[in-house]
Image (cartoon, rainbow, N blue to C red; front, side):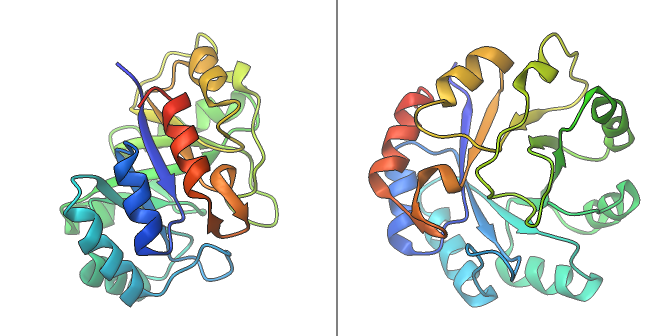
Length: 210
């Protein structure tokens, strides 16, 4: 079975259509204002409705959002998945999960073997852990990869996926080295920051086996 593939940071109907047409199983909508992939709530709601017709799951990316911001986003967009990409605690994830009928994912910067121990605090709470490059100035979407060998022979206790620095040229290697059941790309299929390239989306999905 090929891995699930999430194309993240989509901003236009054309990008959503391309991801669906070429076989994506998930798309991501980014509500983090400093990101070049940011979209407002109205656009996110419109794209979510469009994607719903294509049978893909829609993830809403939040970074250290307040309770009110989180509630507004969830009520207006109604995503299938909430992807927390900041310093959100297990307690916060658990509280959100009790209130909304959506999967809860937690992105984690994989720095060293100690990170694999620390993520156990999300066990039984997060529906999926998304391993990403350690955060720099911007959490996610930096085009930086982590050391895939950290996942070699690791016994995963939760559903998981790999993000960070993936491109059409290296995603097959990432899948082979880590055994990732899900891969997530954003900047790796762009022609400029925040601008998706339809041909790169198609190439990525093909390389990932979709």
